[in-house]
Length: 184
Image (cartoon, rainbow, N blue to C red; front, top):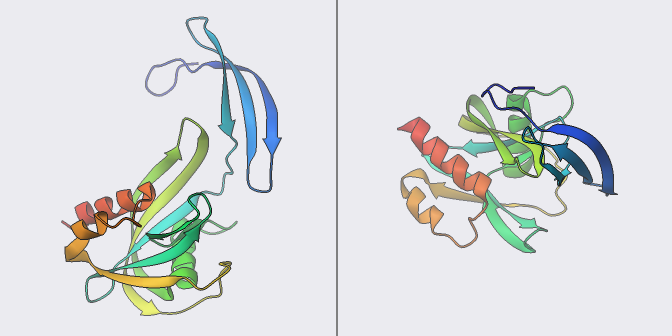
């Protein structure tokens, strides 16, 4: 069947669950491409809830970041507040909740910057990147195992933020650049 670009998607002839954990399900897909070529691909089965990442900017034009433990790199990383969208929430509601839980701020003004795919070759996951302004202090209890360090960074010094060795997460880097473009 042709997709919206006129390309014919491969036919999925079989899907097998390869592995399952508390967080992930890995599937093997048997595919037949339009030229007859057959291949098996693996993917992480994604949920449909989606996620949000919030770029908060306070009244003094500071970015609000959090430093938190990341199991994938076994290190503390600096990034923007983020999390899953809970059932029944809009991306903005989820973003405001995550901002309150992780950074201790709410926001009166949001702009959706972009809906991004995280790793489309392997994972069907989407993340809404939001800009948050008109911040006010409000803390909600979250699910983090330890308090997160909240870091204020001057927006006009964004280029030195990109040079920080603990600011490496691609989603946060992309979000920073999208926010800068939006505010220009």
